[in-house]
Image (cartoon, rainbow over all chains, first blue to last red; front, side, top):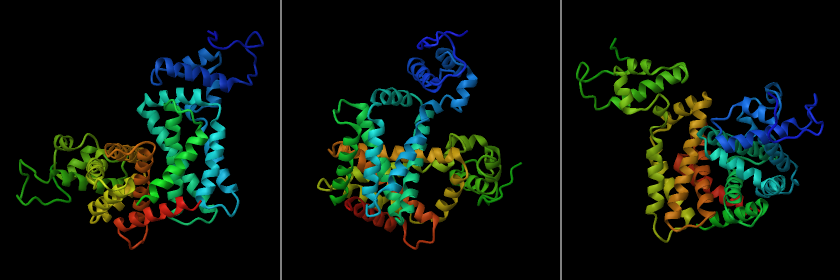
Length: 201
Length: 201
């Protein structure tokens, strides 16, 4: 069966080459995860709704979980790249602050998507575990990028943890509530709050 | 078969009541995990080596993984209790610093055990995931304890993350290297380092 529920191809049928197949699979998967729950959604259901084959699905994603974590690599590359490329004079925390600004810009128009994704992840222990692994990997990658800048230990490891802590807490505020601030501002305010908290001894 | 490899009962045989059965199971399990790897060790092998029954094993642990995480509850209770019981005048970071001192004291004579445990966990993706979940749960529990003290958000969430970041980085130094400092000192120095890092903007 080859019926698309949420997609009308402008070719009037299925083209052999599908330039937007990845995003169509993402949209179909997210809609199904939100409707039926992650555990009860199959790859066959995703491809049916997207009007694509399972072979196409597995060309883009290793499994149905990776639809939700496909952006993790780009997020890490962005953070690491911004830390590495920060001016030589920048302190570790300044390098991280600049990297978080870049991350905020990347997410600027994705709040609705992020909210749906967060709700899906909150409903599955397996996905929460995967999310924790993603964050721990990010923290380690930022620490390694700082070491490339000549930052020693434990400063590099701690600053990597700080970067992810600020991102995580701000992200939860951004997707969770009615806070009018954008993600960039929430992360800047979080970093200021962290400075205030740690100096308050 | 009922031969114990690492335990000589002082009753000269198997007592019906085994006051030290939990620690015997722990020791047998840790030795086997280190020798054979976590994945290739069965509960049957653990109980055989400890000279105890599987029924006794499952009275103490839900599965073979929990042998390595049985202390997580005590660690969390200690951290949370110390935060809640800190003097009313203590700042959030001071409350956390006091709690980390208590944690350092708890681990003081467990460095050899911690090293074996860390090596076992490093060899298994499943265990690394479980460790990340433990740390995330700790962070959330510390944040909740701070909220009970009237600390607002995002300060509570950020300080919870800081507590676990300092613990995690110091713990890795403590078990990993030849650093002569004890865990308490490493965490105090880590917290100072974090203050220095975050103020260096």
